[in-house]
Amino acid sequence: MKVLKGIKNKILYLCLFVILFVIIQIPTISEDFFRGESSKNINLFLHVAISFFSTIIIFLIVDTAYHRLNSKPMFLKNSMIRNYSFAAIFALFSQALQFIITLLEKGNDRDLELFAVSRSRLAPLLIITLVVISPFLEVVLWQGILQGGILKDLSPSFSIIITSVLFAFAHGYSFNYGTLELLCSGIAYSFLYYVTDDLGSVVFCHGLSNFIVYLINFFF
Image (tube, rainbow, N blue to C red; front, side):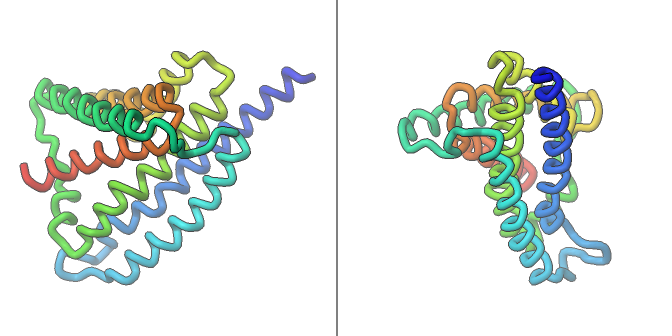
């Protein structure tokens, strides 16, 4: 009975995880042009309102789920220099690998929609979403809830592999060079969480990675 109850709970938690993954995408809606908008015609107040209120509500939901599944504190005050140094190294290394994969693909890695938004009045909101909001919500979900919660009974290697692969396919939707690039990020975030046991350093790594992508789209 205990085994069946454990399996049932895992299934329920995985369903919750899928729902949360969909929900945390809501704040990202505000970083793109709405229907009928252009770089010169933007309802900035609506974008900011959606981003602000959805982030607060979703944070409360994700935070509650995290503390139900993971007993560890989100942020560690000890070894901050060490953890954040690792985070910077992991971000740069994963982005370097993704750059190499892009060269092998012989494609243009520029996101044209991101390029257009970055040159509009939405640019500050886009940067905040890419560097702060999305990294925080995604790290709490993928590393805090999935890797450190639902998969905590597995060995570290299996939890890292499963979390990284699911992260890549959830963002890439298929198996291609883009998914392989995302896998690099997924492995970096998952392994960093295993090494540091600190969500804060993973959020920094994720945010720095996104900022590097933003700079590449903006300047190159």
